Length: 393
Image (tube, rainbow, N blue to C red; front, top):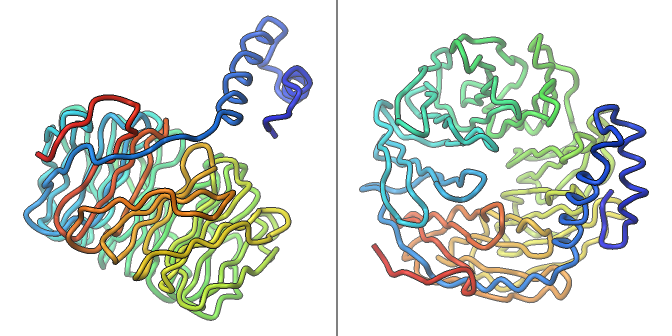
């Protein structure tokens, strides 16, 4: 594991021992990359975000927003039955993805490639689109109720969809053919994610359980049973060893991905846990709650590192910045807040939305943040030092 104190050349030697493709001729190149990553870990996080643009994205409320990896584009879904692709820096609408017959609820880029987008709709279909042209490649038909979660595998060869019909499905990106149907939950599936290897997929359900599935066969490998309330989210750590879950029972749990056993139950929230996420290294776990607080836990000791208090209403979304040193939270109090994990203090309150904020996401470099609100707008927030600020569109 790379840390600020790691000996880079010892780490390279370990990598060479485990990875035959890292030949002696590649040693210096790998070392330079690791040094660059290490410098990012050790550099102080001084981002300060100012309002950059307000984009009046849709005529009806926005349901979801997401950046591509670089942050140069973002996609928005809406109750107006459309999805739109935007140029982040210009605030320009690039394409309208029109074709769904009901609310577009879930959207995702196939990062890191970002040349395709998948959308999931209340019309019971998902669609695969070209980012560059807006062309619809495939319409995935087979669900019998609303599709509420969508995702790509890391190699962008498969799409997974989760639905209110209690099933998940896996689809081939090239042909549009259904590859597997994940049957076994007794209530709605509300989260779905591939592991990084792409051989397993994890689903979270309102039946209080999480399931791990074999991608090739569609067979259930294990059920994670222990929560006493509906699952709000289920996420996999970057190294595929752990699964984090949040629940309406006010707790979070961490599970061993191989054995399916619960490693730890994390308490502290006094109301429903609405979202959960790992940082990019899988060393910290963030939970946000209807109790208007967020918590960060150390993955290992499972001690609470910070409790963030300041929002006036429930927090629906939380995310780590790329360095893992700060957290952004989106709240029904119409604001986004930026928090420092070490001190537990609120560094900034980003105001301007006129209705509930339900989504927030950093770009890959961490110098920009996007927020989505029920006020039908997305707001872009940019580091003061990263370029000239623009006004509202």
